[in-house]
Image (cartoon, rainbow, N blue to C red; front, side, top):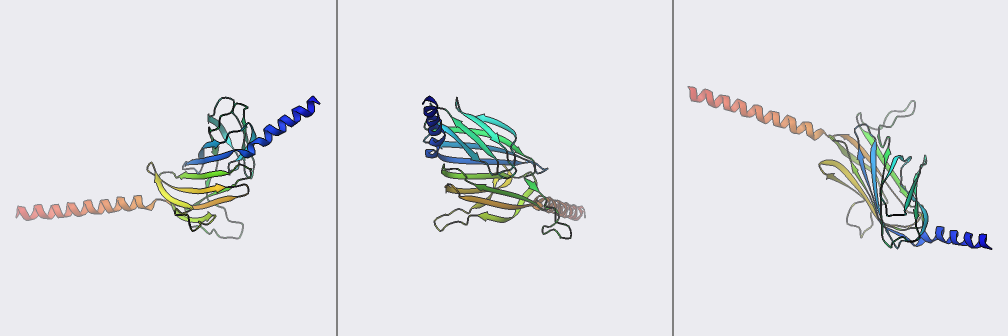
Length: 240
């Protein structure tokens, strides 16, 4: 009888999280020149209920996983996978209605140059690399706002957005993936609202060297040389 009662209590705790909503799910990707990245994730949960669920992260592996901010009693456990890893979240009995969580992890090769199969030619120009992200909400908790911010290494830029899904709806004013600068670094922002269980989103970026940096340097040198030539002619004229 006691075992049955305990089983029912545990079942209720584990299933109660279905009522929880994720108000905001933000991931920031700081990419290093070698293509590795540090992912910084922040979550805002609403209607906090005690229980356990697995949060999909949309990346393979969770290297150097570290908890940055959690309320007392909340436990985060990384569950790495070759496909789509997840983080197991345990909320205590006395959890508040609104919960803020934050954690980080490493991604070894987020920005990479694809190797063509034997006998095939590369479809990308020399120097181009790809960044891919696929996310599926595998849990019952609705994600009200999902964002992934990409910050590229210095002297690199997005040459092309090769994929941005799902397509924007008529009532959506912002593009699914928006190119921008973040604290001086080139990057992109993927955003989607109201992800229910089974909903997915993805993006693929082609990244190249920031050719504009060399262009401005050359243009500056040309202007300086032109000024020096003009100044020399002016001096020669006055000297006569």
